[in-house]
Length: 120
Picture 1: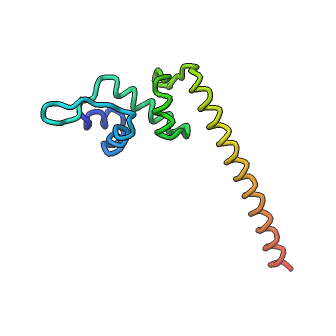
Picture 2 (picture 1 turned 180 degrees about the vertical axis):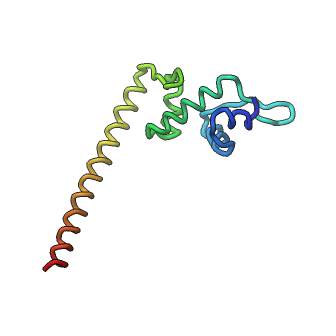
Picture 3 (picture 1 turned 45 degrees about the vertical axis):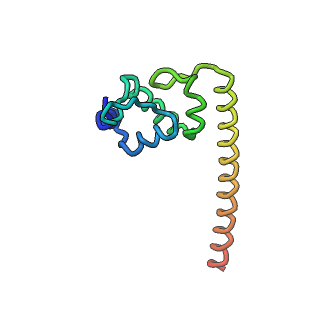
């Protein structure tokens, strides 16, 4: 299928599909006329990419995991690299959450102090 058809089937614009190709996530063949020709499984691959991006993974992390990805969910095979990457990603998210919680607390303290000055 051509890039326009893949875009229609997946709801992902052609610019984004070209980006996935540039990142090594999606590999089309080229027709004699130079047009990208995507295999039938490209729709599944794009679905997997979108869902993994939605989970917060980078395109680099997705490329690393692709050999362990199956199904539309997608399902991840318990490859050692899968477990290590997911654990590291969760640790990073936990750090971000901790930082945001601290920022929220500090902002609340600033707000409370400012409101006290306004009332006082």
